[in-house]
Structure formats: structure tokens, C-alpha cells
Image (cartoon, rainbow, N blue to C red; front, side, top):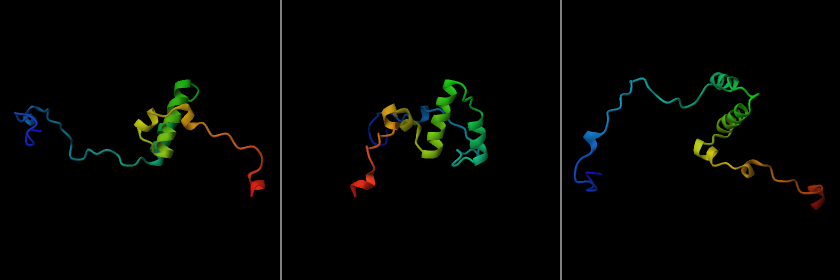
Length: 91
């Protein structure tokens, strides 16, 4: 911001230092074992557990990001009604 002239003073020295170990990394993919452990730890007898399980399945199987999952509405996931009759008869 300072280099582009948006601020009169360089604010970079005021930012806190973030320490990260050399081996620290965000996992790119989870192993199947880890996913099974995670899903197995959820209490699906509880209403919130069922919700959490469904959210994780959406993330795992469909690859949706948390922002996409948060914006889902019930109408987004309800299946469309099947048309009456046999579609092959229309051909």
C-alpha cells in the first residue's frame, strides 16, 4: 500500500510476525483412514451430529468449500419432482 502511494507511512513493520515451522503445511488431501475416523467420531444419533455428518459428506464427496456449503438452501438440495409417465413413451 505504501509502495503504491495509498498510505503516507509504511505499515509493514507494524504487522505481527507469524512463526511457522519449516515442516508446517496444510494437508492437501486426507487419507481414507483419516476421513473414516473423522466421520466415525460424529454422533449421528444427535440432530447436530446428523447435520455435521451431512456437511462433512458434502465437503468430502462433492468438494464444496465451506462458503458454498454455508450458502446452501433446502431448495438447493431437494430433488426435482419426476415428470409423470414414462419418458420412453415420448420418443
